[in-house]
Image (cartoon, rainbow, N blue to C red; front, side, top):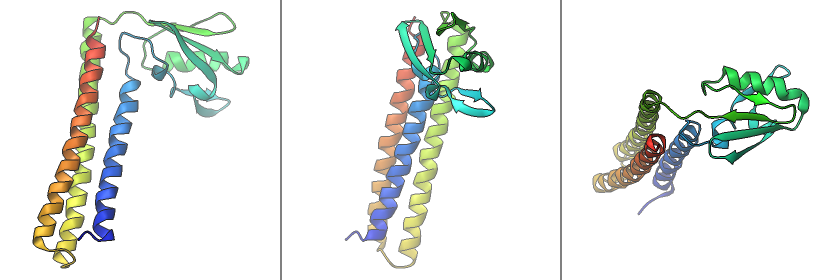
Length: 189
């Protein structure tokens, strides 16, 4: 006997948790591993004539080799702006340009840098877990309010809390898997 309000609370919680997992996925994609990936630079803000614009809107980004990122600006005049943004970023690389394209050659990661990156991954994973737990807390509080207002029975409330816990558990598992995959990718030599 789930009414629209209860369904809405569960749907909202699930959608917000999905967004937390997605945010983590894209966040982890921008963390460097030993391998070149367009995701490392796609969202890099470039000061394009006074406006910060994500690099992916200004250039075609490819990885012709495992440790090379190639950036081909749509507007040749933006070459210097793109290079400046790459050097200001926390990638710790020096871009080279031949007038047509910018190449970023990723040096192999040192053991110390790998450990730093793994710590960063752990931090981001924990932040995502906290976000999901906060969403769980909000959903349970909403259900408790419905029970207090006698809109659902105490049994119904407990059954729904279990549903929220299941949804939370699934999302925490997804977050942990993303973290483990990224950690493995970083530690792969």
